Image (cartoon, rainbow, N blue to C red; front, side):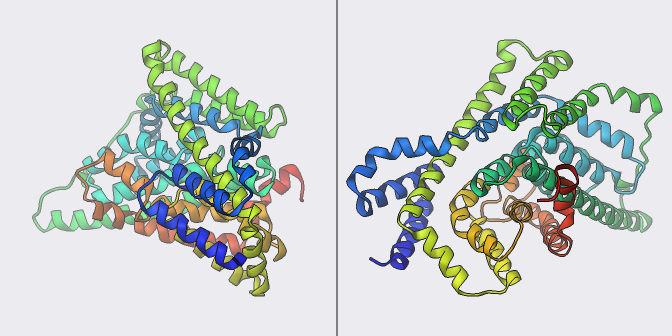
Length: 449
């Protein structure tokens, strides 16, 4: 069987098994094992556990469950609600300040927790009801939280970036730094749209009221005293200090990524005990249980994805596919556009973890050959995968929002996130025209490559 035919069969079988409804980890494992049985030496089946172990025996991957524990500790606490309340208290006078507060709260929480679903859940559970109570449309309230939650895989620490660093053999520290500029860019774009949309909805509410209609909560004027504003800070500032401390430990060379993750997890648990009194076994049980469940699920997907990639490499499928892409002699930017379009399509039904580990052996060699900076591409790919978190049919963040606010129709949630998808496309274009948005900070701090 030719490598082309074998590759097409490998892809077709993968799609069939995935669309059967089987969990992704088991689907990838079954396909990989099946092709090992039929197309590889019989002895290869005896090395499955060894191959998975060797692929996962990475000190960088050790940081994943520790970052998950840190994120669960913050996500299961009232920290998200307090963070949102503090930002809203200080920004309520700005036009669209409530929307901006949600974006900023999502960004800060994402940087602390490193998880998109956790960010959506923690900030959305407080932010969506408050926005709706103050007259914001349900679709906009849902959309801004869903989009803000995607920052969890772009702003460091990001589990997605950890996996990309392993797959692309790139510096994790440099990759984390490269995500800060684009993360700020998306925050500015989202906040700008929040101001525009809030002013539009305010004018509509005012017009209805002036014509004799009901006065919307949008038109009510809120006021917070300086004392109330200051009282909001003590519960938020320790977590901001935690975020800064973790970043200083990592980029100051005081700790490795895994040590930083462990330090962050311990400090997060310590802050919960001191600020919220969360230290009893019954209080810690949901946090530890959630961390174990999510870590097990994610590491199982990673292990099976690595086995899947190993089989693809052994059968020369990935090498042949990469060579075929190079042989097309596509121009540099056409190649990038085709690859990103492929990532968008994969995002319809695969999570970012699987997309990275399954496609890296195929797409990275042609990109390296074309002269692209793989750190820069990792950021662009992450932004594109962020889009996959808020567009159907999978759209994980959409379903998290639907769980938080079940009375908001799914149609309204989808239309609510649509403008933010367009803003992410704008961010990708800006990164292409001005790559220093991503590469400038790591080059400044760690030196040019």
